[in-house]
Image 1: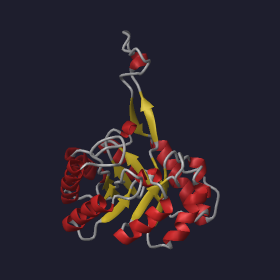
Image 2 (image 1 turned 180 degrees about the horizontal axis):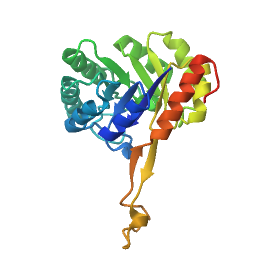
Image 3 (image 1 turned 180 degrees about the vertical axis):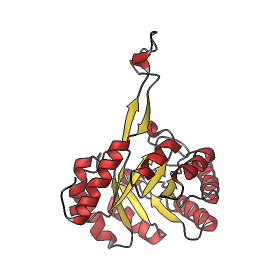
Image 4 (image 1 turned 120 degrees about the horizontal axis):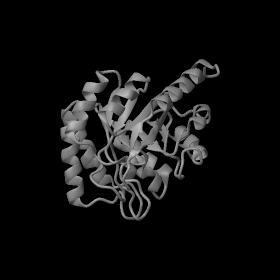
Amino acid sequence: MKLEIAVVSATGAGTAASEGADRIELCSSLELGGITPSQGLLEASIEHVDGRLEIHPLVRCRPGDFHYSASDVDTMVHEVRHLLAQGAHGVVVGALTAEGDIDVHAVQRLVDSARLASPEVQLTFHRAIDQSRDPLAALDQLLELGFTRVLTSGHEATAGAGLATLSEMVERAGGALEIMAGGGLQLGDIPAMHAAGLSAVHMSAKRTVSTLGQRTISLGTQDGADPTAYTVTDRETVRMARAEINALELGAPPA
């Protein structure tokens, strides 16, 4: 079972690599669901991982829904090309129609741009599939489009709640496309995912850092939000996830 970690910094990329992750989904603004990382962030992350894992940038030009305008798609086509030219192993993309189906035209443009930039590119369809009208029908279309994998919580708010659908998706894909469980995934969910035949799991493995409590002046906002807070990749969570997966692969309890 592969372990993918969503990271938002070069330091986080290095942490994931050091603790045994197989790949990272690189993005910015994870608190908004993730948007396309800068070229500088990708370059720095490549340096930090030093070839120890795969880097798959998220290509999402804005937060919000996954129904994109022609201009949005044009932007993402350019992002795909530049990120792959920099050395990314694959890209994470997705688009839906207003009715909640796969936007085949938009996705095909992204796929074509990726394959033109790198014929051996890995293509991941992101959690837009969990907002689709019918995830199993969407899965069939992704198979036809030649995707490598799909990141999904099984059409539920969390992967744990979507386990039954995730299992059905594994059976439907038949090994032709990797089903990667993600979305609110907890360490305690990993054994059930493994037992259900999932070949990969995706975690943000994040913790919040704040300096507000260390300041002598009030920096709080009217809504109570902490303006000094930000998230980092938690080393211990990545380490524990890796240990859990290794133990399951060996058929023994984790250390």
